[in-house]
Image (tube, rainbow, N blue to C red; front, side, top):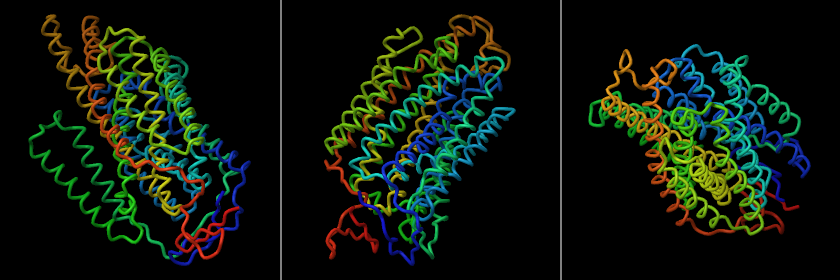
Length: 538
């Protein structure tokens, strides 16, 4: 395995005195990183089955339901490229610890929220930490393990993702169904796990760090990216609800978002240390991986986040039962990520598995697009299994494909860029599909009420998710409306996932390298110069 001995020559560099990590130390540090990944995943999945009860207890609406998820994804998306760039410039271990601390504070604030607005704000703060974790875990692993070996470790990552995604909904369901705990513990429960991860990483993670003097962070570019993305996502969330597609609000928000992002591109093209290096983004493999991640993120996050709502609101199951019913999807993620990871390490080929994964993902969403409030649970489970297999084979491997094509000094920016667009896709997916679901549910309820001669509840709010406050006849109408509308958003997810298939097919086949960095011809035998740094094989 190649290990760095000297700093990159972008200004005077100082390498810390830590020795490169051996195999045992890598496994020990990996345990801490997997804990970090676990707690970040659980923070999202634990609310998937608990959220209907949480929003019901806070007297929230369908729009607020969507925003509890969207707020975290939004801030995670905006902060991901910043974390990745910081990882290329500063101590990766310290950055992981800072992101964990932010996550812990956000979790505590979420658990203490007194209304839906406070919960959304706390989740937005928590998302800053989640953005750091989802970017930095991949970056740290890339700094320790060559791409060829990383396929196997990506299988472990996929396994942890599956356990967290299976355990999260089950844990969330059990918590809200346990009277002496209550929904607030859905947020408090992640705190001790995050603190444990912090302790493990403090003791086990010892990367050779490089500090470069006279380095400037591109805060202007980062701010413009965050502002542009935020404006467009807020527009997506409210358009066709609070205001029309063709309105002055749409014109103002879309124009502002486009101008901000255009300025961001201009700034990034001239910055000495850009947050999103444009020369990396336009490279074929990276560009197609970004497109694939955007599509997979939109389809997976946008579709899966509403499954818990479908089982509870549309089918009448408890949160715990809803968590159990999502197991087929998580089994698919677990099995496919581990098997595909080992096959990738064995063969050194990655494109076939990404292509197969995206095709299976489309098939899974195609199956789910036919469901309604009376569909057989075996049929629904089969569709979820296919979606899980597709996600397990494609999501992590799209990051690996990019990491295989860039230099070690750009691993942070490249990895976080893919994670940024995947999270962006998820945020757009949740916002768009949530808006589509809310509009379709409202239409279904209005039509069904008129047909049945049922009077609307006081205030005319048919989107309130506190079903216990509704008359029995109205509850049946609402459940049928949610159950029937969910299949429609999965049809949209299938269409989005097709873009991922196209991107995967266009990717250039490439063998995974066996060294940490790209090799270049060197004067000295056995040495690989990397922008002034020499990596010696040993």
